[in-house]
Image (cartoon, rainbow, N blue to C red; front, side):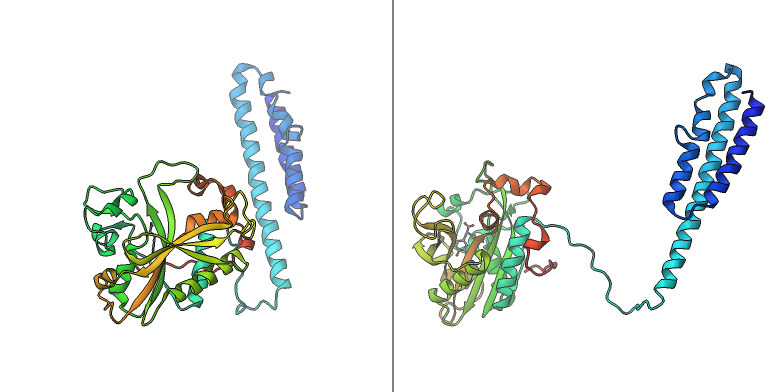
Length: 359
Ligand code: DAH
């Protein structure tokens, strides 16, 4: 075909295309009309492949003509897509004449959340029902709040229990959420009930059961006559709610300088119910959390009179709790950002996350 004939044919293709696009009533119809023109075996598509059949000196001109035709077709497609979409909108509007703008909007679908967030929300909801507030403190902390005010003075051997990331600016990355105990006492005084979920850091080599970055949730209740019985009651309630079954708890002595007496709280094994199995190493008990009665020195550091008030505190390992609840065996999963490890919203029951003020 010579170049003049080609031009005629291109013009005819455009006219034909326009007519068939015009008659398309849906976007799908338009799409198939388009592919009959520009598809590989469409009227224009076929011509596109013929460029190599022209003499080299003609190819520039032929190429330009083909491109122009292609662009013109695309313009027609855009124009008719718009026409069809507008018609659809108009049809929708006439059908929804009774549209009520005061109806509540549609909630956007809730994404999945990290297992630690899921457990955190649940713990927050439980404690909020008990009148606890949810507080937050800085992750970059001072020696004073992280150790000193928790009855761990410089050179105290208990500092070795928590391998610390010291920062060049003289601060440190908090090794636990306990520093917020004294911050909360300073801010609110007594009586006081709060929990502090948050990220903590330790200078650890990472393996299946150790991480350098993990989550804890501190708990603190201070009032007149708060006793170990209150501590046990609150812990049982927490574990019953989180694991959705009645659990037995027991206290063993444990040493933490900021509590006296200090305990390790165990819970009857979830797998065997206390009979002894591989998970609980045949003991029937699972070590759940450290806790104790707030040391009088810590109350004093927080500006609270230990002769008038007593309190209990606990340090819940949120990361560990999430691993137990969702059956995650390797702690590294928690910080790897693997989307397969997040929790579907149907398994959640908790409040929405809100930004907290810092103590
Ligand atoms: N802060 C301690 C730790 O991370 C855990 C802890 C122990 C917290 C006893 C407490 C407590 O509140 O009473 O090792």
